[in-house]
Length: 158
Image 1: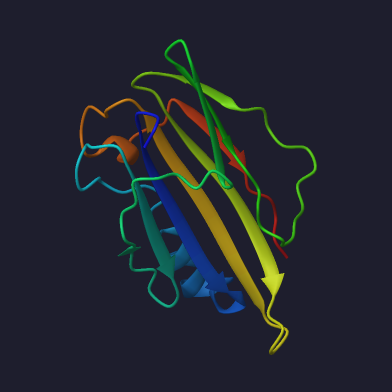
Image 2: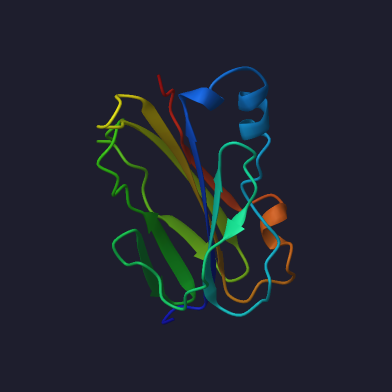
């Protein structure tokens, strides 16, 4: 990894079945940040999905997906931009500016989408949460706290 960062990408996926009642309560209670397994630079991806939204940790990676995430380091300041690569509604024309972080700071960036399944016309939904800390984090529970910067691109999904 070129830049000294720890990335946690949390992807919460659901269908129309989790849009109301007890299922929606269970979904909205799902965490958007987790304790880290170690403090070394890495990319950790966690998936949560119906019916119980139990976290499943994917294989750890050393490299950042440069299509999804743009990082630029200049004089100990990191510029972070989460790209919207989903070909799903809603399309975002006006995106926020990149977030600038000093060492030790972190960002939580969230955006959501929905799309129709071709086989039955039902709806799928996805909430993507990027947690990224610049520099070696102070402790394993960094993403359980309050971020230095928070970018919320969530919108109402029908």
